[in-house]
Length: 350
Image 1 (cartoon, rainbow, N blue to C red):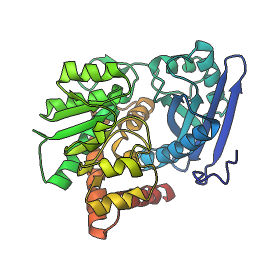
Image 2: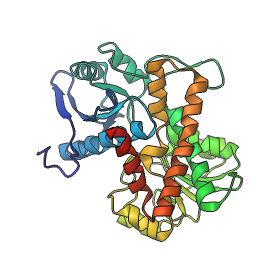
Image 3: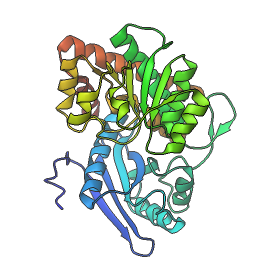
């Protein structure tokens, strides 16, 4: 399995493979770029089909984290960790202790946090073995009081702000009343996003591979449940991918009818060429690493000690960043991905 000639290798500074026989840990950490600061990115646990799939994911995700931090104007680089294993049946205290040791072996070049398949409990175990972990303690909540270190509410809030910006750009609307939104993935981030959209007056359709997530959205938010296949072809205003990556591909693109794609998932486009196809179709795409930066902003503020009010204001800046991307893309006749990449690369070079 080659790394340097891999199609997703993008001048990564370091790619490290970790294995612990006693716990069964098999993991990869990728550091993409540390020009702006130590590489920070979540620790994902997923039942990858093979090692190649895991390597591809960690390379793509770590690059996205570099661009995400740069666009959000954070003093952080980009990195990512993946654990190869089933997040529903493969977890153990020993596994995450070993993962903590693996992170610690990099001496602070990489800082980890929760991601798909991991949460606060896993971060707390890792924090027993390394200080290079975020999201293990309590934080000041937006509305006062304390909350745990889970950054997903901040991710969801940033996506909500981003949807507002996209709706204004593409539909010319200043409010979300009656907006029709299809949410693919109703887990922690997807459900919290749905809750905020519902409060703003939107109508919701949801799908998820976990039936309990769909049922919660239906019962608590009045959402309409649809199958995983139906979610793509709905006649809605916004399609919000909030699950795994690669969900916009040649097959799903043919079914999509929404004029806006704006969601929380990482690496939403299966290949870069789809951005131009979306532009030609008049579909406004909010680049994933621009719209879903709320979580990394949250983690950064945990490290720097900023207040909840400062954190909230920084997350709301996602709207202005997207507005800049949308307007430049329209003026220059380019894709939103091209413009977002260019802005991020300019900041990385500086």
